[in-house]
Length: 208
Length: 208
Image 1 (cartoon, each protein chain N blue to C red):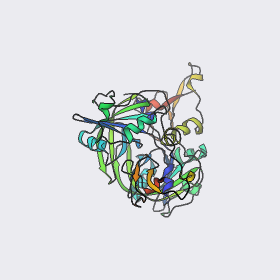
Image 2: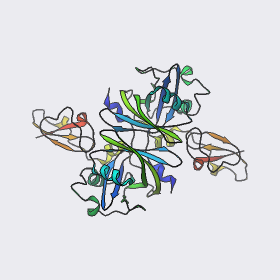
Image 3: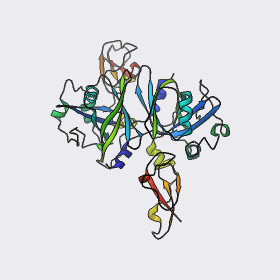
Image 4: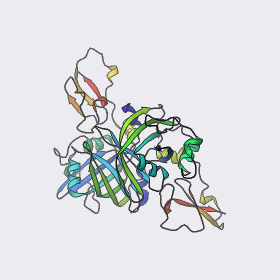
């Protein structure tokens, strides 16, 4: 199987906002499709190790802010590259909330969906949620951000391994997908990125 | 709810190929996301009225050809705008097959996935399938087709209602999404396109 073939799948990029009791959080996801009409339902997948996934399982309500091409990388980094277990993301960066009190992004987003989970399935690495769209609002006329555009134009370029002298020592591995850094010379073959779930083939060496 | 907000979701475009016994078929879909690792699984949604959906429920195996930007509109029309109940699409247009004997597109496609359904859920209008990727193959280095690019650059432009004199009689309604034609002066408000499942708000009038 050529796993690179999977890179041909097209995705948007989203900020998934959650609230359970007094706890709030948000993370970045790139999987959401409309799957049915009457009522309109969407499906999206969230990494099981994400704190957002825990809160969503508790409350069953969330927002999906559909990012547009004006989103700053720093916003994606803020929500996507640190855990809500370590940082109270929504206190440090207050956001508006929808009718369910769930925070959503009001910049760099072309629309926001308010969602109520109707079903979920634990798939091991991720949970797949099916949710009814209870509200939907346009936020801007900017072009929606695709995952391909994020990779080509938003994400800062990591130093290319090809530019490095080969004799330099490897001190870590960086996930090409989300920039997560694994410290150490040898990345285990069966390693999966704890941030975005991609496997060892998506990591590039970091040299001394 | 502003249903236009849902248009901000990004999608690819795919030819879903199926085989059940001696029956084969293929249709066009625009919903497929990777939802889990170990093993790699994808989720995709198919309109319940599609013949492809019936055959997939019978056999549980399919291919997903990920269309690229070189795909001719005629190919999309061939697979997407006529039913396998009326035309034996794969006999009239022979295609290569994967290891399971399921046809896939070898032009205008950047990759093909061979899929084995592991779970499905009937959502009324559509069925959501979860499938293991049993094989994946790159077919070209062309940029994958997004649904937005299909709408802007591949699909022929329908005559705009704005260009028509207002006194002309409406004789039918055309689905902006798939070009399906409803014959009659008045489109019922609760109408859903039998081809692509979009609702009455996606139809434009056809004048005499």
